[in-house]
Length: 335
Image (cartoon, rainbow, N blue to C red; front, side, top):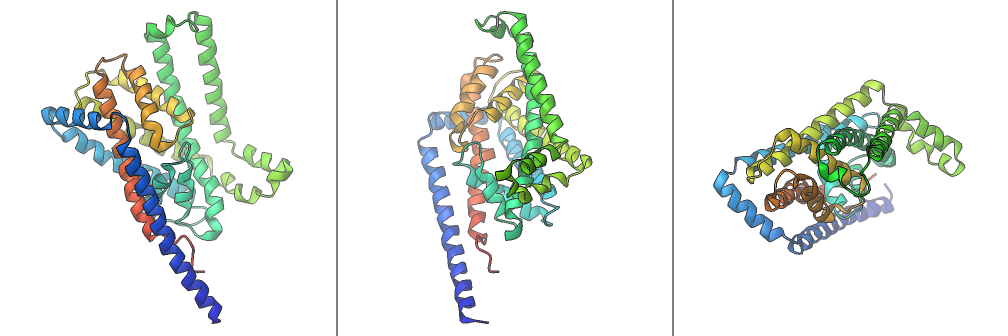
């Protein structure tokens, strides 16, 4: 083979090592800097330590195990959505998910996760996989909206705080708000099962027509496939909801589980629609959690500590593991 081929191959190997090491260093520094500057982190960790010493560490152990189920279900979803492009083993899909978490940690609403995942696919499939990944995220959003809407209905009808607020004093405005959310939910579900509508938009708009080839994969999923993705999304929703409630219980918060689940579903809905950067969402999540779960208990220290704990277990720990996995990813393929 020509000498230039070997030179090009050697250059790609060097670039893979340099970029992999560079990404790892940047991500590690980002996580470290955010941890040491995070407000209330030390206080929350002390609160967690004291509570767990009194009540035992079984709760934190269960939550940690459930973290693997949480991201494992997401890996299964991603494995399913990229199947029309190429076969990916579950272990490789799980590695892609963790790498996506690490790259998403400094991006708005975690959009960087798409870049982390597609690194594990062949070059020809990378751009097409973005559209496929969005379908999987779409299914999770639908589940979040449905449970969030149920939680909001419960909240509006059971807590006088809402009814006494200056902007929601009348039943009329409550019905308008809930009616609007129901319509949005229905339209979202309709669009999810009619993904060809999105493709038709790309076909009709000239400047989008050029990239239509990259989104054609969205019409390759059958109704059965889409229902399966919704099922996996619902199971994952139950898992990370259970994680938070178990940790709250382990930290000494007293509550009725069904009430906490319904109010927590509103927290997830708010976090899904409010633009945040993953590494910085802890502050927003903490305030929203205190607002809603504070209706059940005045133990705000436990609420903040649980929020920090879930942030560390479900985001920071997977991000660290993902950044290590990125060291072995070939960003530039040899061929």
